[in-house]
Image 1 (tube, helix red, strand yellow):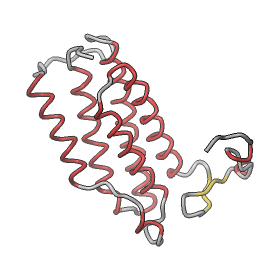
Image 2 (spheres, rainbow, N blue to C red):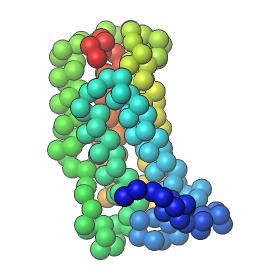
Image 3 (spheres, rainbow, N blue to C red):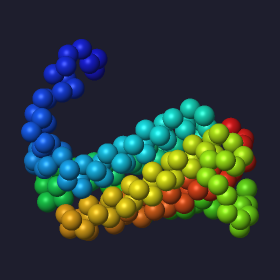
Length: 177
């Protein structure tokens, strides 16, 4: 769909300091819901930038899973709509863990501290920034889960935790991109 009119991107209803989730429930714009969604969106956007340098297919897979997580967060779990969305599963978490292990098997890291963004490559620096955003996304998600009592997001929490580990390993990987 081509965006040709302002009305297609701006409802002009958010000027009151409120916004709505996917179910059309209204929340204050400073609710942890929107901070969490925004941080995950920021992570996905920066991963998109990183993809243009690294060209790793896993980045697009991760971005798709982050969209799934945001759909889960933005949808009331007691709604019919929630039953129709995609979920993060243990298979998604295992995929990340397997990729971490495969990367470590190919590129063993040393046990020394390093300065983020300064080691090896520009791509490594991009992965460092993504890692720090992922850590912040995890903290925001935990705050959201606690404040909204969303135990249904446990796999999403695990996924983002493992994702930050993957991004750390990728930041240390030698440049092959």
